[in-house]
Image (cartoon, rainbow, N blue to C red; front, side):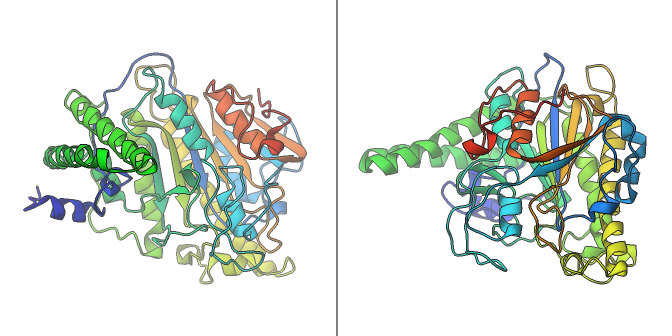
Length: 440
């Protein structure tokens, strides 16, 4: 066990800064007692970039009697537990290029702020103006003691760049508040199963911060006091979590990770994907969270997938013309690989009995696989890929559905409604005016 000579060293090794920064995203396991109650419902949103090859992705027919195209063939074992939703479009407009709006508005359903991040075309832009649907649902679940979990949500990444910009973030806790996914499986393991020593050190830090906040509160103006109270509330929540950690008993132990898998090497991408999937399912088994995202690379992601025999970057390939049959074949292969990751996640969940419940974990978990673009070389935001696998939200699965260019905000509403969260609008209110998408 590593020993720390000071709190500063402890915070530095956690990758956080001073003041309120320790309370954002890099804290180790703080513990939260699980709650037994109604059947659990879970959501995983999986992202891969740069659009798809439509003729090799979307089924030709509607209804239950559909044939999976090449990119989706890995999901054949789950055909009766899946939905393909063609014709769902990102109609959010405003600042930013299609890649920026494609990922920044994907889960938020709302415009980007004006900003100074310049894309390949259109006007520059900043972060999204609202929270993402996963965080909206997380907040709903966390407000109920019967569905509250230790972390609320977990954000997994695979080869997501460390830089913070509109192309690399899809999860938002609020306007101008993006969350960075955790790429490093060892860091995620530490977050999930932080050591008691870390908790003791954190408690000492929290005690000092709380005292400092109390000391300066009376000397600040109204706006600063409001911000300070937000920090203080977070400190109180962390202290409550530390108390609850002592009573926690996990359903399954922490997984053992092989050493030395580097998170910044494209060659390790398949191994990193497997490790993150294993950690995600393990976290769900122990009810650490019921909401998760799994983000592969980023909007404009340029991974070179040499293990598939592809040496050009993904984004570069996605710009090739439709008549370039070699590029079409390679892009189809890339999207099939991403689909294989989805199938591996679904398989692991389907083979894992629901803890304390009936059926498998997949029966209680809906996975949504999506993308920032409908097609890479046109940069269209129409026909955004949305493929759902699993159960638990009351959707009638085993279907191919084709819509007529409906706003994706309605699908985001449907996810919330599946959890019993009866939102009437989400994101841009005009784009959800027709209500939630009825998938039941």
